[in-house]
Image (cartoon, rainbow, N blue to C red; front, side, top):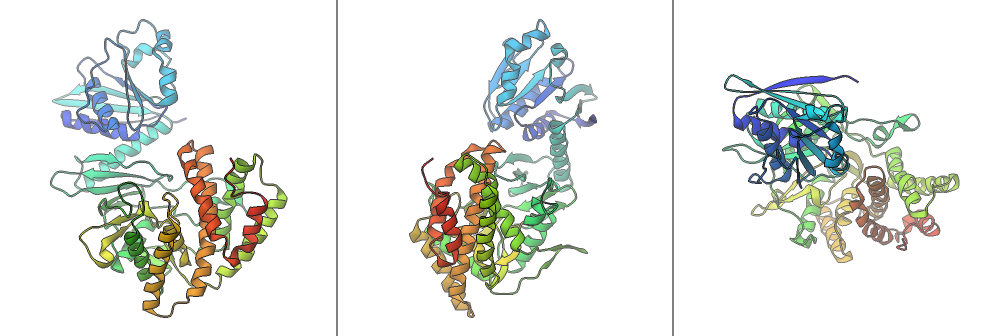
Length: 502
């Protein structure tokens, strides 16, 4: 395994604190940061900055653990701060609980040489030394932790090129994707958003020799976001302006649209704001949407189709993840065949529906309420890089059956009614066709989500998503009453897939 290293000159304490911030944002459970250097070289100052950023507490008291040897801190990642200067022998690390610390969080270790060969092979080393009026940090390591550190420092360089090299970086709470976001605070500048979106790792072939992401048409680079943001803004709708970009690395510096929500303080949907969000979709629908969008001069993004293969690979997540979790055993060949037959019959009906832009994740986390503004400008939209050309009804189903929010039948009806009224006002709207497509896409989306949320638990260690399953099943029962879904409804009923008995 290759070993890498890089250097950072730290001219003052503020630069040391920024390095601590950059290291903190790369930290994950299981990581070890080994801080070495002579007395006074800045090890404790760097560790203190890292711990404060990780805890989200700039004034947190972080004493040197020289005498206690160990100090524990809560935060985005639990951190245990070790000072091994007074360690008698490497074997004493067992008594200090290093293994237990790494099982739950990360470790920051000063005087790592006292540990002998007891530290993990993939520890990240930060060697500090005096250089002129400042310090030199040599960062080295191997493996995923070092790769994350390298990427975090590359973000700092990107911000520097955008005139925000001394900005404060504050991470967003994590979501279900590989992308990460930060709020960027620079002096005398409004807040901005940093999107960190590495090139998509396609994974192994899952069907017909193709990876899942290829079949589902998942965006592979940030170019898709840049193109969609430009196209949405050209239609008079608030999407983030792209202020700086590195398409190769997957870094974007974006306009911050605000923090207003379509939910109230208790997390409940505000009916009027959901209606406004559905009316916004009506402004996007009914007009032609090009399949080729400009990213930059001479660079284009082709908006993929939401075709049968993409629709099917998504619903099959139910078979791959939810069915084994729900029934205690894998989906057998008979169920898979009948499942495909039922869904293909339903998907054939979508071929007759109106097609337009499908933003794909048009729901409460990605809709910003902009108080004090009027018309379409009251709302800002995010997270549209996976957009496709498909059934226009899909995004209404995503909104009116919000996966993370309990939407009552009354608010669902009023949300859909606002969209229908807006489309009728534009003319040429086939409401009956829309109602059928709405039901089909609602069931398709919620079927997929059942599979995704179980996968997030079983594969990714994120059990919190399981709390949403009862809501998703209720949405499915609600939508499956439409006659167009009869084949799927019968199959789900036969196998008890929507019961609440677990």
